[in-house]
View 1 (tube, rainbow, N blue to C red):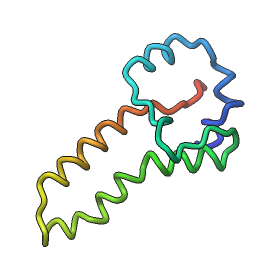
View 2: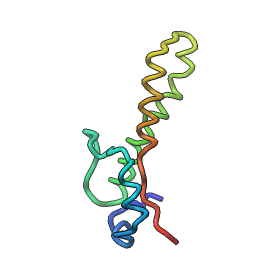
View 3: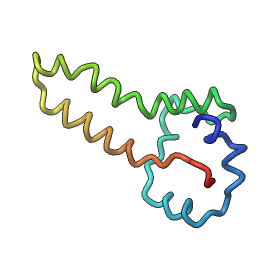
View 4: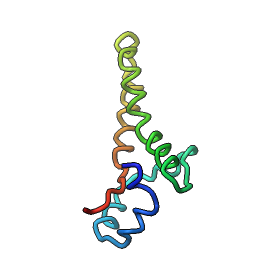
Length: 94
């Protein structure tokens, strides 16, 4: 999956109509301050880590939210994860 997101594979299906339609409703995660714009599978893996990080952190603190309930923190996490879930990753056809 990581390799399919590299620039080499993305260039194989440029101009796909479905890809251009989906870009209208996506979140631009690449504006994150730690986003790596270089090519290569390690950079793509690090970017994927940034995308899934809020979900992992939420599940790590859920047990603590039972002890110290904070509705605003929980709502904020869900809002952040909802926005990140709009991210459209690249998967090649066939």
